[in-house]
Length: 287
Image (cartoon, rainbow, N blue to C red; front, side, top):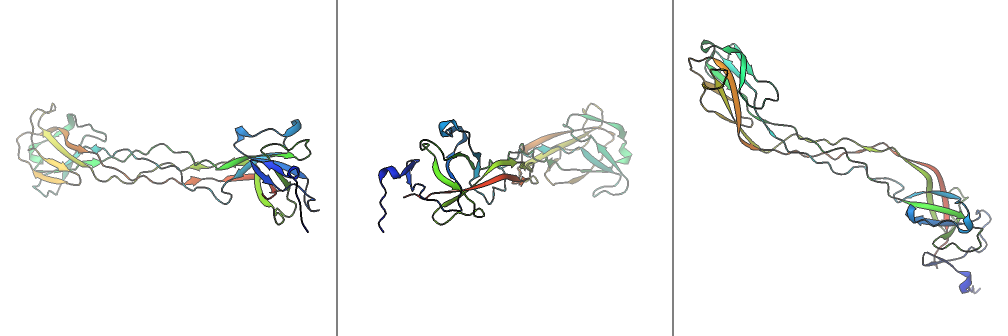
């Protein structure tokens, strides 16, 4: 049998031609018109009708990106050593020891000790090396946006064909479409309670830090007791000391300070995207 379609029997939607609704099967619903695109570009329904449905059609219905935007890590700064250990024995030391501690966060300026250590109590000193500070991670990123298009569905009983809409019908076959029709699923609500895990940085590495730690016989750091000694990263050192002066203060400077770096982690997406009020419509094929 030869089927003849006149030009007036075709429906124009989005610059494409669709087969008109010719005798839909008994198990299909009423004729509908569907528009898909950006929400701020959605045209109204014809004849001032309110939309039958509005919602969102995810572009990736089965899954979403599971990682957030990349994190960044600040530099790992050089940190001065703040403590030395005295010993009454020559290197490598041993026996009773006394800790000279300027305290965490010390900036290296002259720090007088609470109680000077007398010369007879000091034969050697063990110096701690400089270290690298932890890297500061960037702020927690936002989860990747949900790739979804806005959907507006209007009733089909209009006086004219709404431009930009495609003809379709509601599925009533357990959310499937009969042969020849294209299935579209959308949701009236997408409840996004996802968040990104905080950014984290790995341990610091690289860099070059060299410190000079000076010990002094007076609280103003004028009379230096120990010889110049430079300590690099991981280079704990012991030096013998022979001086008539007590140990009364300490001061330190960074001779070299090249910061290290840390590897940023990839923050995972926490939470879920909840899809509510699903609808399935079936659109007609293009000619």
